[in-house]
Image (spheres, one colour):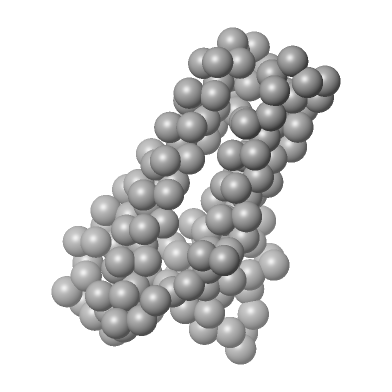
Length: 149
């Protein structure tokens, strides 16, 4: 995973910006899948497809941010004062990965309403994580990382 976001000539910031867009697209696809009628044929397989993309996008996100040449290394080189914020975001990656795994494992057998609640909670947590990451980048560089359109 992540090979689509590695290039020797691209900065960690640029890679993170592009990956941020991919993560948002995956989040929005899961939102749309959850909003479809449960009785619609293919609801669960459609959600599974979107969750698969989200799992891959989040793995890419972790690679682009936490990798040895990732965004967090660049942030800490530029603004060491942000070490606590980087630590918090890294810890969130672990928690979000566990939540993604839980939703994925429950997909085949969970009550659709319960699945919607759990997946909705996951999407909210991802949204908050993305915002905290954008806030940290802004604090380091006083620039908006983008990826919101």
